[in-house]
Structures are given as C-alpha cells and as structure tokens.
Length: 181
Image 1 (cartoon, one colour):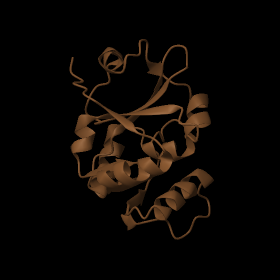
Image 2 (tube, one colour; image 1 turned 90 degrees about the vertical axis):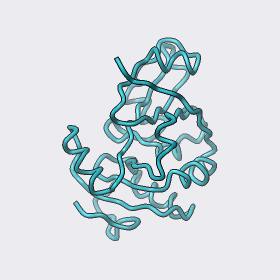
Image 3 (cartoon, helix red, strand yellow; image 1 turned 135 degrees about the horizontal axis):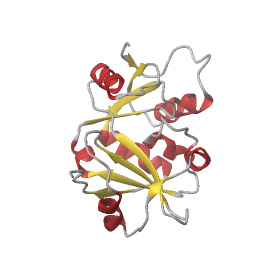
Image 4 (cartoon, helix red, strand yellow; image 1 turned 45 degrees about the horizontal axis):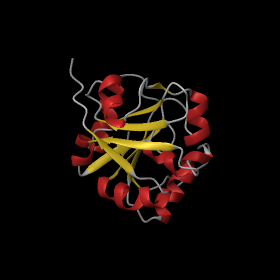
C-alpha cells in the first residue's frame, strides 16, 4: 500500500460513488491523503491500513430504530465496544439495531463494509442523523472510506466538521460512549 495526496490519477475501474466523493472533496478544497487496498475483513488488515495513513479509521455504524423511521450514522473509535443501551439513552431512541443494506444503499449510496461519513453527501433529504463519539472529535485527523471499501482517506477533522458537513446540510450530535463491559 502506498500513500497518495488527493484523488487517483486513473479513475478507470473505480465506482462512480467513489469518484463523486473525490469531486465533492475537491470542490470544497478539502485536502486528503488516500491509500488503496483490498477489502479489510479483519483487524490485522485494518491495522495495516491505519499504519499507512497514520491515523486510526473510526468505526462507522449505520443504525435505525425498530420502526425504521429514524436512521443514524455513528462514528466511534474502533477499539470501543458498541452498546445499544448506552447510545439509546443518549439519543432518546429505544430499540436501536443495525440498518439493512438496502437502507444503507438508499440513503447513503454505500454498501456494507464501506460505511462512512462521506455517504452523507448522498443523503439529500437529511434522513440520517450523525452521531460522533467525543473521542473521535479529539483527533486532529480522521480516517474514513470514500464510499467504497477498497480505499481509505485521511483528512483533518476540522475540515470534515467545518467544511464537509455544512456542505451536506448535516449537523452532528456528540455522544459519550464508554464501551466497556
């Protein structure tokens, strides 16, 4: 794996959703670094990607309530355990569960394994509420996928919060997750 500045020079063979992500970031003048890789199916592979980027890619979970009337994108450190009860109490939503792949595609134009804050650029109706664990906000940089699971990006957290989110029309709610047993 190599680290590159910005978008790939050759876009042949890349999905349109990935190219749209680079177009969106470039339009906003958000600097980013990128690495291309195989799909990361285990922590060892994730750790290799993190090492190349020099940042820990956060865990991104796409959640919904039981009625499927509220959808949430949760960004949290990868080393924390997700506890439904802990989050549900903070956002006043009972019975949170993982949303279906169909809903992920419908609202974020993302498939399982590639869930990322970048998908919010595709949520034109602002259906998805963004939740960010306070520990993610403390980092100078954050890592995420460009709407595909075969590339990863590193960019300044401040750029994501101050440029990217306003451009998508999304706000975020800070949550405090302990994630311990």
